[in-house]
Length: 217
Image (cartoon, rainbow, N blue to C red; front, side, top):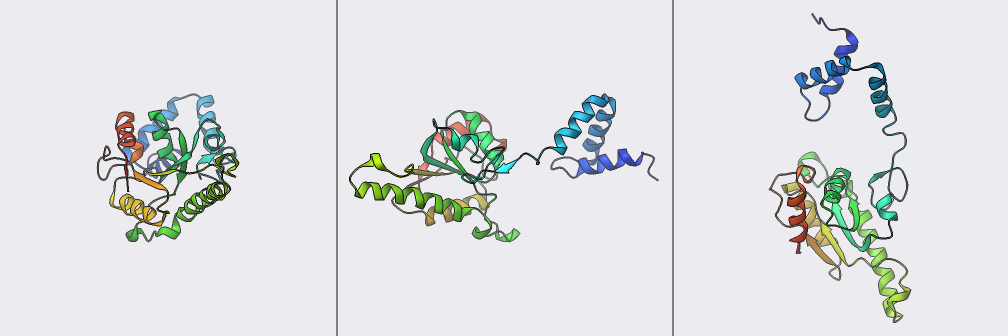
């Protein structure tokens, strides 16, 4: 017999669905909220309710944003010759904390995983290749005319592969590297990250060293 009110049981159940949250933690969170005032609970409810209503995906890098292009892609101070390829938008937050990278990003939306039936066509690899090809083609056209100054788009000189150091992440990085033109420099972030670890959990120093020690494929 469940002695808890239905509303309490329902919230515990919903919390339990979140990653890393077990039944006990879910119960603690629920009873913590019960100890808070109505205004605090109302603000939390509003934040959750409006979470996805004002968000969209950037059509250039596929980061979550409120504008399209996102603030990073719009920033004129960013180095548009660099593209750092990541698995998820959460990885961008980790990289930005390092303050070591000032280029653009590209979010794949996951990694190649045959076990989970995820192939290259299920990720934003085609969009990445199209993005690289378009910018490099514009640069080559301007070069043939004898001047870089009239390049029609930002020239991408390096693609940094920063997928997670897991079997899936490594397979994804290798696949992408094979698809990119040999005319463009392709690097992989160094092994400052542990095998099997996720980018989002790494500290700033580890990420900074991994970025500094990247190697060409």
